[in-house]
Image (tube, rainbow, N blue to C red):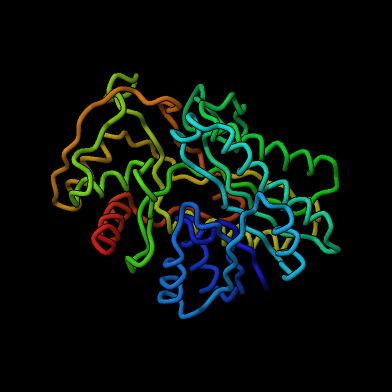
Length: 337
């Protein structure tokens, strides 16, 4: 079976690609390398002993996408490729709308030309919920106005997929709403590799711990939470990658061409920024230099998942601890420094 993995050299994409290769799938990885590195491909090979096909393609380019679908015969598609920085999206919303929405529309256009059913997994985000009224968040919650253009772009992508489903001219689709992936592969060969200043908390923590950053800024400590800092649902990257395997296997067993599901993927536990910092210090026996700063535009206060739907329907659940995620994240940082 041949699977297209867009954004397959990125953080989530690379870990999922490793599991797919270990399961025996033939992969075509597409990445424009705007927020990734081709060295990741070599490390995927070191872990798996396999060489997936790699194509450097900008998915905003319709002709390039058409050529991709002419050259390969895909049985499944996992669409990770997207810009993902909340902060950057606030400063440059047009970039996010063109890339995140445009690339999905180009892929769907090609799927509709195919003469066979397609198994499609879309990488969405818990940001589509905005600031939910209660916790934990389940899939039936209203999708409020997203707090950032990044979240708005993901919400629009979900609307596009649901519209195709309701029209009946669709494909088998599972949309996954991720919470906050952290950690790295147990080998320390792949992990989160931000280009430039990290936008996510854990790589900023590890870069501060190793001395690459002078200090870590905690964006606000006056929120209405247990310690005044934002609360998130942190999930180990290996658990998140495994969720994609479960989804692909489910799609391949389904006879219904218009199958459509949405699942949260999270640990189901809320952890504050300060709690995560303290846990990192304890697990890795290292002291962090951090300061309290102003709130950051686009941040929501509190978000953690009710992940019972994916557990009940796909028998998926988290296997890795938060401590393990923080240990592997630090091992990865030591490995690349």
